[in-house]
Length: 254
Image (cartoon, rainbow, N blue to C red; front, top):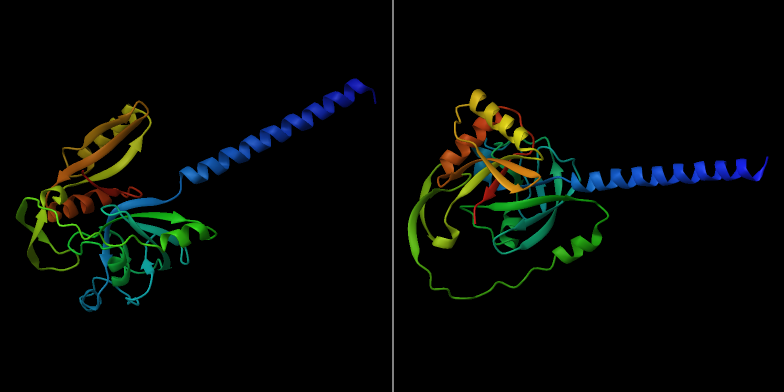
């Protein structure tokens, strides 16, 4: 075998190796970009919900466990309260429990307490993390001390349904925490794709006013809303769920 032939063989092997490395990198990047995340309302567990058959299984209310419909059992998630940025690591104990699709998961009272969630508006960000992310878990277990700051802000009395309960309660909220949310259907690379989705919603549901929001030159978001009433928000959410879209999110308008 002459040197020219040997050089050609070595070059082919080297290029093949580079292509494989690039392919592996693309797969890894794709997996990272497709990591599950969802923003929406959590259902805070109590025994009344079980008695009223709004949930089919009990959970230890002092645990750091959650029910989730699509994540595998024993998966770990990071749950964040976007209002105060407190976060915690929780484990999915079951994905077989039945509860309203309006909620992205069922959490315990302890998790709600640790995150200082507003029980009338338990809005959370949920992200799936790998089981070997111990450094994240250790960091997330440390919570910021509650800030005892007296703020003088205008207060409005508004009526909001207590999520998870049938009764309505009148509570006081500051204007900056006013109830206003939108339903995110999906993000699209092309505006025409977003328009097609919008037309499908109009043609196949009773919803006639979807919005296309330009996030960037390559991201177009299809939204419903905004909603200032929890009942209308839930009705529209259930309506759009009938089209079997994956991972619909509820976004808090700020």
